[in-house]
Every structure is written in C-alpha cells, then in structure tokens.
Length: 168
Image (spheres, rainbow, N blue to C red):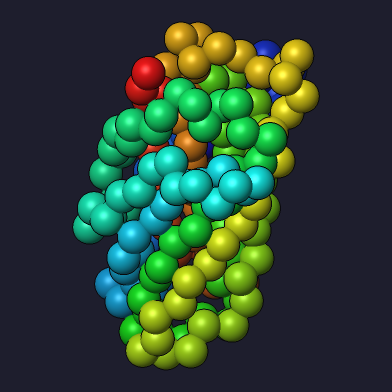
C-alpha cells in the first residue's frame, strides 16, 4: 500500500507492505542475510512460548501461530539469531503493527554494527499495554499484521509482513 494522499492532499502512510531491495547494496545485504530462528518468551519467567525456524523467504507474507497465553504476559522477550555475509554499519528494525488495516503501534529497535560473515543473537523486550487496554485473542486472531522493515543505517534492505494468529 505504501504512502497515499488523503482528501486534503496530505501524504498518509498506507497499510503493511512487502518491499524488495531497490538497489544493489540492499540486494547484496538481503542475499547474505538469514534469520536462523526466532522465539518469544514470557519476559518475567523466561518460559519460551513460541519458536520458529522457518525464515527462508522474507519477501512473502506468512502466517505465524502464537499461543493466546502470550497476551497475558506483562512483557514479551523476542529473541532471534541471524547471519550476515555483509558488513552492516547500523542494523535496525522498524515495526508497524496493524489491526484490521489500522496502524496501532510502531516500534524501533537498533542493533548497530554487524561483522561480515557473522552469526548474531538479538533480544528485545516488548512491554504489554495495561490489561484494561488489551484486546481479547478472538478480536486479534488473524487481524494483526506486523510489517518489519530492515535497515542498514538509512538503506532500506526490505520489508516483510507477518499475519498473526492466536491459538488457544
């Protein structure tokens, strides 16, 4: 979807989208970049609630199934291992969370320098909203899209999209 113009001529951000590399440097980074695995755990107890090792194609929307119990956590720790053939001067992620096409949250994460031909682990903790502001799993199930943009400093490497299902 990308940027759209509203009825007043103002630029507005559209919904989530998959974006492939647009230049040779971004393509080289993506060609040499791999997510080996990702998991999510209760930040308080460390209990792993979800794990996935299938991250072969970052340019295809995919479904992930997460236990609904994750919505009861006060904080969620997300950890992933990635490998990179290329040197990255400033690896960072920008994530936009959409519910039924409406932007609900934006998150920004900065990793920094990545050594060429290296494997790295990156962990972030995401604080939950107050319990009174949380939506039930039934309202979220299949209606949440997470758009993740991967950057090396200001170079957009790609954007990927995940559709989230909350399993009982």
